Image (cartoon, rainbow, N blue to C red):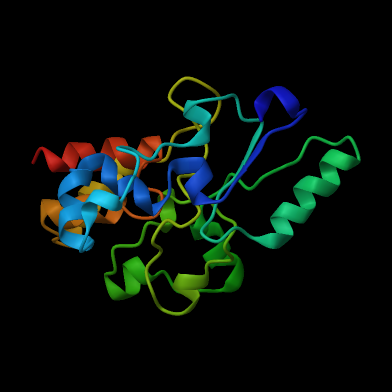
Length: 194
């Protein structure tokens, strides 16, 4: 695909971070098959689930489970017009502020991933009084390039020390739909060792 494409865009959590099935990366696929399927000998599956970017160069990533169709249309329109697409880089917290939502972590004591999750969903879960589950993946920024990485360590510490989640609950918060995205993966691995 990469050789034939002028621009390669990964679309959705499965393509950008391995998706929910990336949970297999922390377990034994063969034992899962034994439990789930009545005839596991007939089931073929990969040992791991990884993002496309681990295999080929990706030009743009559209995060989300599901993605925002408006965002997809904007990216396609921008590319067709010869404009470099601008994807949201801020956190879900900013979407909450724009919508006038009360912070569910502060007001309700919920373990919300909004501070480290990229905008794009319109803060659907917090708007319904629920905590963010990180469906749009970690905010941008890397340890090497421009921008700051999401401060998962601080948020995880708050979950543990402030909201009194036990280590396995902190780990589970980061191992969701985008659990194999590097910042979430690294943070969950730290809590696995506790």
